[in-house]
Image (tube, rainbow, N blue to C red; front, side, top):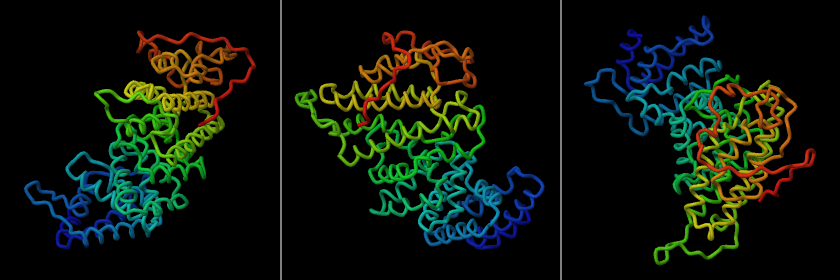
Length: 449
């Protein structure tokens, strides 16, 4: 690598960048012939940092900066390289070598260039770059994934009005990237503040994608070997948790955004009659369509989990992810005046109840009714939620299941019983009284709003 570096030092910035890609292409192509997953050592990464990201090797040296035209030319060189390289394994390892965070000062330059490269790939529909980016999103910590998502949202939802149509068209070009992009966006926009409510154009695009083909959000899950223990701090296998958060929190988050002004230090108690008053009608309908699509996807999961021999053993919607969601709903309900937001609170809790019921019935959410009762005990009363957390009560014929475990789950979940039960985490919370249900009687849903 030192000989290569000395030859690159004699070239101009763009020629050196192009040359280092050429040398590493040869290097990794040779490595892949002897090992299916070659280890990327320090040498290639240092070459990329010095000659692509312009981070000098010597600490005392001043960092070089490409002007705007040179940066555009560099992006074109990289786009063309990934387009022309026919071996996916070589593309993937070069992309990973370029953009995997190293925890050093080059990471800011690395992330900035990645955002611009993927944005260009969207604009000119460079599918190989989008596929590499999809793999990158799957194996990179979520803190970096949301930075890439934010760069794309800024470029296509904020910078140029109407440019969202360009982003929308990649749905058919790279569904895998779209799935990972949705997962990243739902992690970025968690509705925890007014600034983290998704832009309407972005929301409309995602709802259109999912409504057109609900299977889109399962692409990563269906095409990924599943480990028993999913890594912490990375994107979920599906965007289901984030999409449920959007649907459930939206009525309250939009109501908070348009909270009436204080009058003599108190919020007005005037009761509104419009259930979508906190948001415009278009957004209200979009979230309703999204909620329906999410429920439809959840209903298909029983088959997919069974096919992978994971039914009742792997929860795609972790109970631990439902805990902060319920706490956020409770906080928002307390923050908003109940007299002024009763219909929004009811709509939010209805959607939560429907999502919990279908997720449990399909095997996507693994928990006991006791867990659920304890979790939801502080929420405002809601008839549908009360039904979900209380029943239907029937004894499971499967002896392997713990008492009270949801009856549709046929095998104990991975690691069940290895950790303390969730109720112990909230010993002081009151629980709702149980209700008796007649076996065999259907369990009705309230119509989706």
